[in-house]
Image (tube, rainbow, N blue to C red; front, side, top):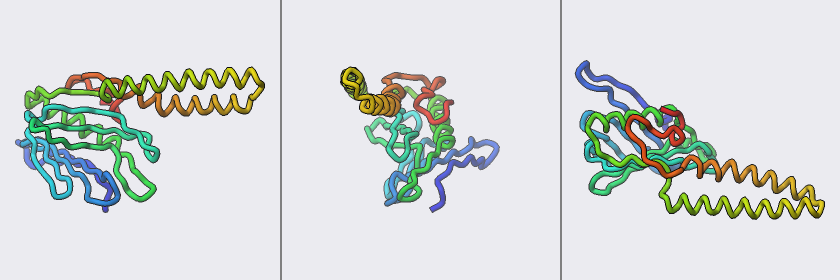
Length: 205
């Protein structure tokens, strides 16, 4: 299947550009396809499809969702007033070993979605990051690991186990880069249509 892409097409001078975006959430199954039209957000996932007027969208949540095969992976969860939800990911499965980033296309599509919602007078809740309870649990986990590593490091140095100390330093650096980055980017916040959280987009607005 050709690589999903984003297109900007103008059908006439009186119509706004139609923005398209697509990605594959897994190797099995069809692509998740989205369009921004004058009528609203048009989507198709397998046999399901719909068109959501921008004013009917009640919430947008942007998060950072890294995976082992793709550390730069972002997600937007769109919720309608009837509680239906669709998810848009910044990566697309290409092969068994390749999850391709679509940073520029995803960022442009999300920015344009917010612009369309703003023009429609949307009152949607714009949320960045994970839920406060999960965030608090993550911060607590980071703190506990930091205390444990500090204690083990001090013990290793005191007993002359310098090899173990170096291992702990490397582990702490890796843990801080992966988990610390996840916690830092996913800090719970609200934002506005004019100021999207750059930490939650592959390419800042």
